[in-house]
Image 1 (cartoon, rainbow, N blue to C red):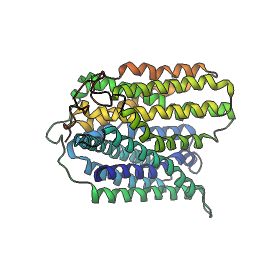
Image 2: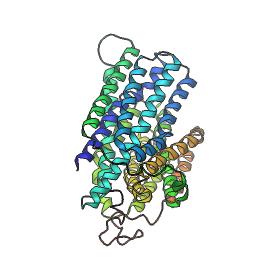
Image 3: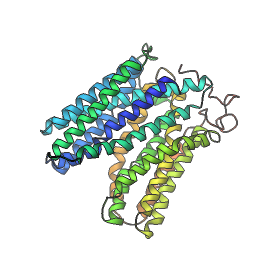
Image 4: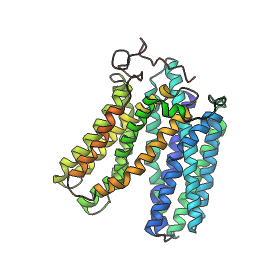
Length: 417
């Protein structure tokens, strides 16, 4: 692992620790300590999602133009400011402003870091190192480790011993999150190398995105995956309420999902990388996710936690297959000069699809029984034929459907150097 790859993976870990120390408890703080109505809490959370996921394409385009370093540093500085603001915000306007700033900070940081880790993974692979999916799998595992530890840190600060109102405990969690981002900011400022941006001399344009049918297919397939994966936050709580009358096990199931990625991502990547091309891996992951919904519907008569447990494990397994393979494909389709734009667009478009599909999925889940789960299983299945063919890479790249270089190395491996 190169120093830059270690820096990016560590930064992703720390970024998620700080983020998830606050985010899981934001809705309770808004509705409890601040007394906002339910509709307003939903609006604030929606604005955060839009200012983050919807604006990824902006962060990606800025990364192409100015390089990852200034975009990452700006994102960290805005996240520190946003969390400090949120810690002391008491009015609705102040809360909205702080939440939007927190979201936009991630819209700068995340696509810049994802672009740079993809670029570094391609460079390592081109220099004869491990396949790029290995580096990208480590990146996913590092992020999930942060997502696993962040809520624990937040819970310790929110429910620790000592006097103080819940608002004061939430303030402590926000300030602790801000402190984490200060450390990330300092580390990036000291260690991230300065590099000439690959797309500095090329104007940003959407034409390469809309004209690239393979990238559009990959984006729509990823959107289907993300819409299905989002049911971890929508369908799973609903099922727990029906089966057990509460959501007490939800936190443990989320922790299980993160722990599975931390422990299993690398072994699974090593096994898959020797056998399947990247497109085949994505298709396999989508099928596994469809099985997750089908198995949950089939297990509903058993009651208890078995359906929720099966859903969590199988959905996470599908995630571990899909995400590194999708990230490995993007550099092949984008090229060096537009890698940030394509990376950001992948997240922004899929985020909009999830936003559009959330309400229909929620309405569907109001019906009891296995039918909603079986219908939701069709989402990842419909995404399978959208996965583009002809993207070189993976264990069967030299002899399978994605035939390429004799060595099995992607023919465009050096394009992003």
